[in-house]
Length: 95
Image (cartoon, one colour):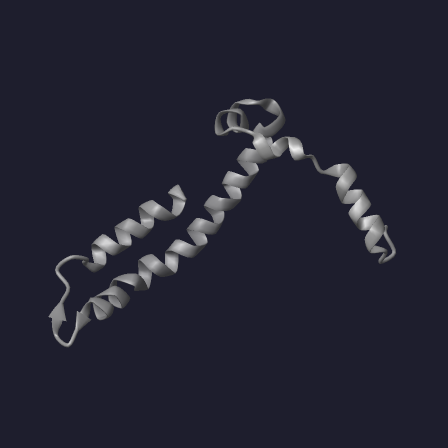
């Protein structure tokens, strides 16, 4: 389409992108029909990435964090491996 000409690529991008979406509020991103589909697609992609990434953490994280928190035979009473996994499970999709 562009035959490797970077100026044509930048011109195409300038014409087909909008700075209007830089100032969209969270409410309008979900409610406004102009942005709703893109918001749903982005949220779906984030959830798919989350489910792919949380599986190894939930599977092996308990053993990993137990080894991390057990230093020289002393267990850190502040953070347990279960508390760490629950914190990750809540913080990751929230972010």
